[in-house]
Image (cartoon, rainbow, N blue to C red; front, side, top):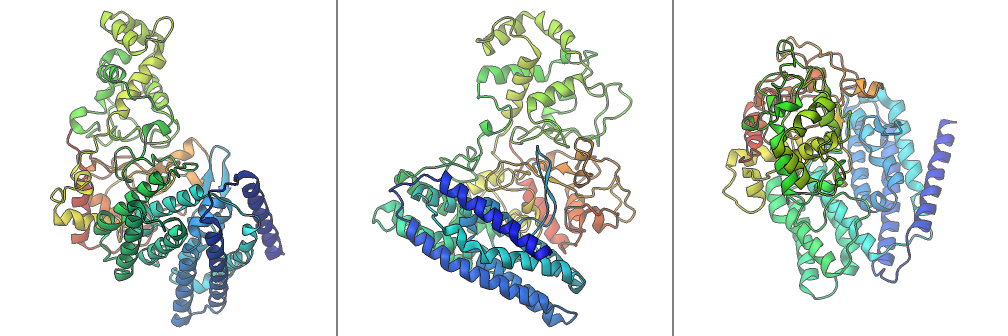
Length: 607
């Protein structure tokens, strides 16, 4: 009964997806790559379906025999590799169908409709197979394998009346290359198998084949692109080991140059198209400061020197507080990288403390939500909430406006900054806008890491480079703190901000941890999956912004890395069934942890 129902659901999804593609994609004569793409995908669909059947058989044979476990893991790896040959196609043209196969092994909440996406596919199977006793999960494993086998057998139906332009094909491979650069090499979707580098090779091969009909011309852009694709595949094939893979060398010598060559080719071919991503495709590469434009974020303000200058002045203005003694800098000290050296800031009464740590404001504009629990969407909303919060600035909007309006200097500054505003330009929205503009400007991107990734090969030392490779690999840090901002913006679309349940304890005593009582995002959205969930902040400038975590529990970076190395709160023994961070130890050595800390220090900007 369950299998029949599942089959009907899958078939319905495939039908809807096919229909939307047929209706939604415009036909174009510019479709040189269409027929070869369809033929290649058709072959790979069959190979993928075969691999899922092999996986299903291996799982059915799973028992306490170590060989059966090994066989099941190997079948999973092979099926994942087969999937990577079609992933770029499914993720771009049939995104709803692709979610069946490779979703994270945790419940995801689709906001604002609060729809739950139950985990399914490869990542769920991986988590179960790497359990100490995987055979006890036989029933769930069999259900997941059946889901994969059933849905993959129906994939050829997607090709019925399928059409696409060369522009769309080029955008699909552009996004797949970004997945390789930001996700595959970090082990994002296969942390236990550690097959990310080998899978990256399959993804690049898929890109290579999809582009082949389009890059036959002898012009320099096409020739360089073909050469870079060949070189990248060779390098990945020669260095398949996940833990020892040199990610910095891959990025600087192969991945980023390949991204640049692909962009150049698309530009030369006049085939620019951006239908899905928040990225600026005109940027040199993903680590360029203009790769993620500010204007995609809620409440973004067009850069204006006068408004930024006004915001900087207001940042230090004590007239915005209820007692004329506090300002924004009271908790976000500019000389301390706009952070607070206390665990939690002193409250308005001068005696108690606010509930959470004041994080740095650097790069705060590059988020889709604000506050640790993401309860507001824009910086303007956050600013107005802080101004009126009784524990923070305890100000009243009307009183503040009367105070500021008395200043001749402010009258002039507001008029210059908001010349199109009719009436008195000094109002609370203008104050919030100016402050938000200033905060958005706090994104220098001039750290040692930035200099290195952009060509200065002397900017980082050997220990920092080792730390980067560990951060993006064995340490699994880069699978939550995503490049290039190393915050919770999820590649390759950069349209969502991630929340995680880490199990951060109330104290820093790992032998006797105390469960923190802060419910995080649950207080804003009271659903179980958000209990103790917090936004993933940037780690840029983390060297200068101690203490760490939402409650300021950890005083130094080594403590932070050690916490993750031990498997978060659940790894320390706390009862946290909803923890999204793996509770398994990372098995980082002391030297490796020190190297990761060294890398994080390379992210310190010069202010």
